[in-house]
Length: 422
Image 1 (cartoon, one colour):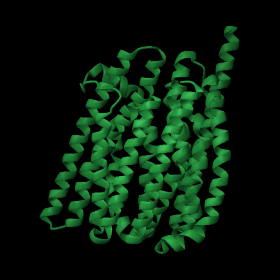
Image 2 (tube, helix red, strand yellow):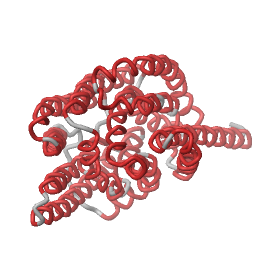
Image 3 (cartoon, one colour):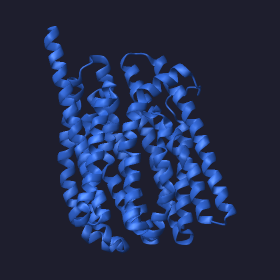
Image 4 (tube, helix red, strand yellow):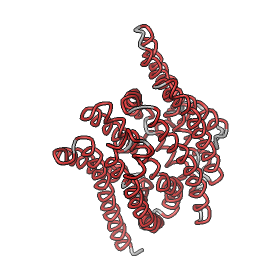
């Protein structure tokens, strides 16, 4: 993938994502006007099990995310298709099993006449297909035209979610469940219909072992860094601040995700490029050098945007969502996650090497800093703000530790080259 195709991929992803984010942000503001923190926080409780059960995909997302571009870089399309086939079969099966379990919870709630739990668990029975099978499909979108198709589907989902906001004044938390489930159903159908690798879904032991063997270690670390990390944020905030604190954090999270759109788009477009480059050259230094300028440039752009957003929040929040004024300090901290994400772009070099332990050591560093910082800051900032600030510091620690791993690997590569006379 040349620079022109890379910029095309980033433009497709970020352009579509920005439009999607605008709809999501407007929808989030309307949700905050129509419903209070207690209702939004209660709905978020139903989403916690899926966040912790993402590991059931057994690393197949990361496995095909690495293997498809790796095999593309070595012209082995048959191996890429075999990996996609077995990963798809596994995640379709997991989706069906998880959906069945959530439907059992829903029927149990029906027998108790607990209609809120009925709606909550039913929505999760739908969303689990988005998590597992949808996650698999997303990992197969790798070329520029595929990123365009992905962006269009995401925009359609956002448009549906925005339209469904207007049922909330009449339906309350039930409307939140509908708003979560219907766009997920539409997205899964469209992702499947336009999937780039239309291969039959078949389980095969050898192919599954290869995909899982490559992806599971990375998936373990990524699960700790993403779903488990975010679920822990929510659990700690719910424990310290109740449903109201979790509701404030839910709105701040919408802002955080909006600011992360461009860094995530750049990372998503660059990862297959870095993996393919490493497959061809076998050089950590070259793979790292290709992404470092993008990280520096993007971080320089994001810092002024964060400062501008921080200055505007105290004026906009009281006008737009007055019931969430207490969440302004949390929102300000959430803005800075985008800078950390921009600076972490070169970390896909570790993913490209196929060695998971150097990748995981940085995650462990962040996982230590996160809770320790939250506990130390608690007496000064209050529980909810301390958790979010601790999470930010943990992500910073993870990024710095990963840079140290890359530097160590480049030094070793230079020593090896010197010893062989290359």
